[in-house]
Length: 218
Image (cartoon, rainbow, N blue to C red; front, side, top):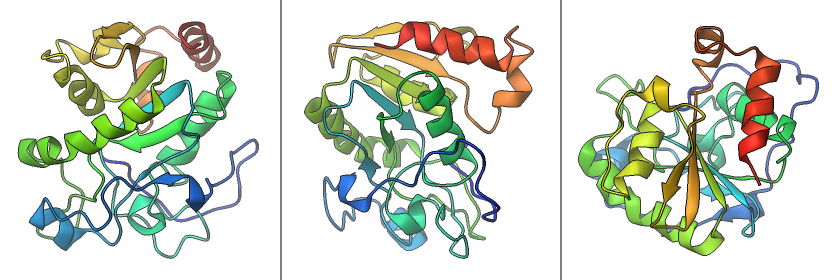
């Protein structure tokens, strides 16, 4: 599931501010490793946030975005990961509620992957592999204590650095994993688009979910 967008509505109570564009970590300006992604994207959606953050949040890829939104237009238009009102605002609010309003946010794949009709699709294995060095550069530079992966595909991307596969994603939610490659801990979370669907099925209220996340963060 990619970081989808929706029309910009009234600002939600407690919603974090859109990140400053100066915080974008441009690893390879004008990257053209994936021709299909170059054809899809409006802008590369770079990671953003403090370079000394103790928590890095990793998603899969930006969605198409909404160019008509007032501010939260999505990474395909802002050039910064997790800047949609729906997924971006929700994840940033979740981390803030868990005590980390200053986390760093990025995606495993930096460009919007579209299908033949301009809609979201999952990135290919080749596209993930082409973009993996960008993510590695970010994680090496920031050196977080915890990497939070949002959803199955982001979790699979992080486990690939350890030569591991996802074995039952829902069973892995909130189950920390050592990331020896980065001397960090991986904490898988539900994708924001599915959070409300799965929280009760996993036996958590929203407040219990936040408390459990907080307990695993530095």
